Image (cartoon, rainbow, N blue to C red; front, top):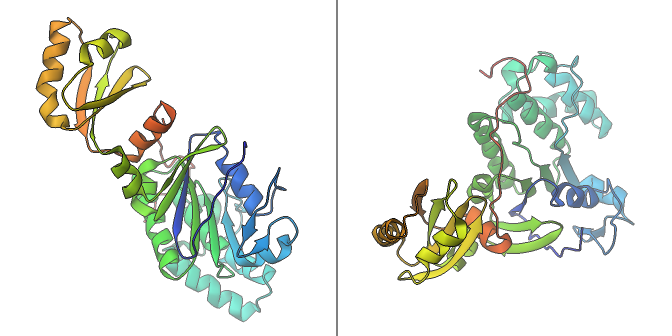
Length: 306
């Protein structure tokens, strides 16, 4: 980490975006008192995470990337155990576990061992375990990594529900769609440095142009760039990996001219597409590359979700 400065307003869903190795998990572990800050100060609800860690832990819930479930326990047993660890009576623990199982839609699977749960079910149970003590602030470290689109959207629904009940959510993710869908504000980190921060709509609006993406597929980047310089309405061209991104005032209206210029220069490219700015374009403009994330599947085994 090279030093970051963040402030998250109470009641928001705050997205912390970046590629693997950017520093997201390290930051979360420091804020959750699992790692001492390497420098500077971290405050949670006004409490110093280094000097007042015990009080911080009373106020936060944490669901990390590594899901720590006992495979021989049932979902209900795991939550009731967590309730007991937070000092609840057996009766209160049973009631709270039942509430949480219903909230994450696992009541029908509550008395099955977790080794038979699918990846999405395990994620939702881990989320429920983080909510046992009704925390004011919930840290979710890439909660949908490895999940299929259906399971991912179920997690999104739970996050919205939790936030709607008053909790502040600090969410790390590689998925730009996830941040755009869920977050009130986002911060984008790359190589330990904040490169952009703001509401998703604000960040995209700052680009102020359409984006024409050209997949080079072996075409010469320098020659392609030279052929397109001076295009009407062109603000800038950003190099990607085997691609160019043209930030242009009228993307759709520029396609014919782009194709004509490439044809005159005898340059054959793979694809040409136009879109409104996305958070991926914000990342591209800030860092010079796209935030590449591999395909995900719900591959943690277990039974199908019902």
